[in-house]
Image 1 (cartoon, one colour):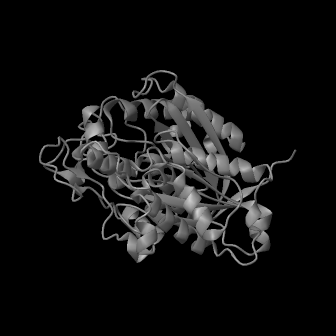
Image 2: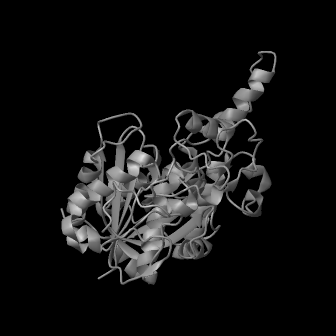
Image 3: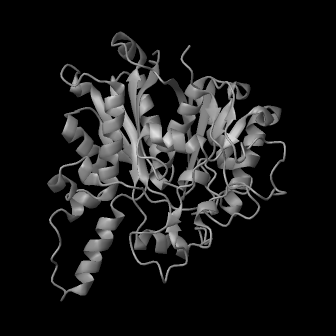
Length: 416
């Protein structure tokens, strides 16, 4: 059967450097750092005392107070980003066939703060199990798309993909295929995460995964830099409205980009460490290009996973050099995690949005905080260091990788 074409018609972003799509983009191209001392709890005894929290965000500005109290932060974030994307797409909610509209979402952890609070409250008591009746509905990772569908009445496929930091890219690829195969006309997709909690920070610190650059939080996320010492945890959400091309065209929708393909693979190597030669990363990018019907030389820009871990950055760049050969030097490579931190299950969504907007505006956001060359990284690669770069962009790729060896890659191009 002939696969249907899929396009992006709506975007929504709630990030540590901007609470809307437009604010996020302005933060990206200006090289803004979202890292700052943590305000949510006392960090005195924690190894890492900073993160990329949302700024000036109050869920009840967007969600009814009673309803918001029944949602974990990761669901609140999902609702706000999805609302923006749906409004941006200008869907006619009165006439659309809601049986053919789905919500496929990504979350790597889900309601961590809710779980943490309920267990700590139980531990403080006398052993009587007095749990909030909304404990489970607030915590479970699938509840974010459930709430989006309930609000809008979308009755198509509705579920969450969980593949650690690859979760929202997985969700986008699933959404792409659902429309390609004719199962849906429209899908709201993306991801959200809210893991800046004592459990989240404590757990990642125990793994030695986080930067401990407490004296300079704003420069702590430094992908590709020789002095990088781990990632900076972030929070927020990204949402995209995907539509079948003819459906979007018929209703006169603004089209940001065509979603032309994706790929998945596994490292099959280690629970948390990447394969040092990036074997799984090579496989996922090759899968993605083949799925999209593109050649390596078609790609202009790659938004890397680029978390600023000592092993991960080198392995990913080695894989890019292997897949793209001499063309790798002509690609604008960047890591927007240098600004937003690592949003875990939401990373794929906000980074895909960055890549799409880079294509729309002809500007590649920078990789900030780079001061020291890493001799293990090919110096001829253009890592878009410290300053945004203008260029014509027709094809963009976004990589996301998760603990467990999960790899996902998505690619978009300007509409022909």
